[in-house]
Structures are given as structure tokens and as C-alpha cells.
Length: 88
Image (tube, rainbow, N blue to C red; front, top):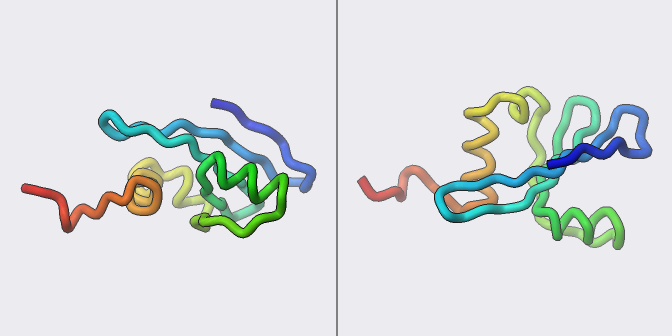
């Protein structure tokens, strides 16, 4: 959706809309160097603007740019999707 350069030298935030089936989730990827912090958009606002502790997932930048690994991370942590519990 959008990218915003952060105050840090190599930091930026990418605002994403992820959709699985009929469910969608607005996420923020806070990218600093080699790590990426994934948060729900509302949690990002609470964390960045108000300094609150919120749920987030830290992944490497390589995992972030890998579509399969990124999808697996988003499904597991933000859509509560566990492939082992999926109906066959």
C-alpha cells in the first residue's frame, strides 16, 4: 500500500494489506537493516506513537522478501492458520 522512510538511516515502514480468502489484515513491516518487525497496523500505531508494548514478529530480511516464507509467517502469526490442523 505505502512505504515511509523512518528517522533511522536505513529504516523504513511498509504498510501492507494481506488477504487470505475472505479475510484481510492490514500489517506494517518495520524494516531496519537485516531484520523486519511485522505488526498489525493498529499495533504499529500504538507502538510507534504511544510507546506501548504490542504483539510483533521479528524475521530476517531474507525471509521477508521470500514470498513462501513471508506467507507462512503471516498465516501462522496473523491469521492463526496452522497447516497441521487444516482439514483435508
